[in-house]
Image 1 (cartoon, rainbow, N blue to C red):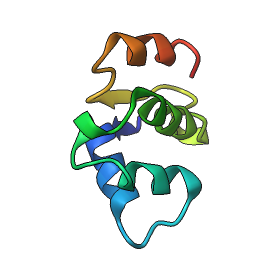
Image 2 (image 1 turned 180 degrees about the vertical axis):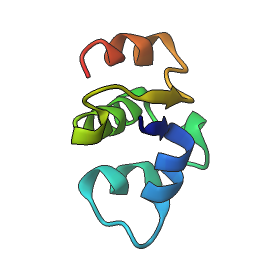
Image 3 (image 1 turned 135 degrees about the horizontal axis):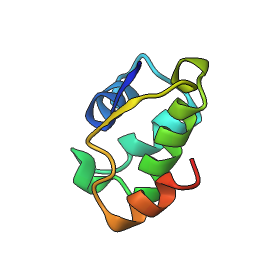
Image 4 (image 1 turned 60 degrees about the vertical axis):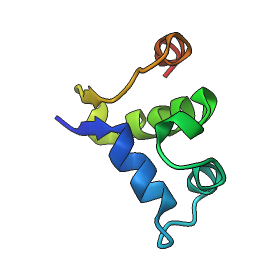
Amino acid sequence: MPHVATGDMLRDARSPARHSPSAARPRLHGQGRAGVPDDVIIRMIAERLRRPDAGRGFLLDGFPRTIAQAEGLEHC
């Protein structure tokens, strides 16, 4: 079962080694999760949950943190 941690995902997205479109946007917003808009976090989570290894279940860590994120999870 994959461990899906938003903190790890954001650190990875900010890494110079990553160049995907979803990774670029978080780099534009301050440090930490507080500076990243809900829609960006939701999109990152949705992309991660579409991977085959999450098909049978997953463990979320650090998500959802807001009501908007919880509501967005329903559509992932």
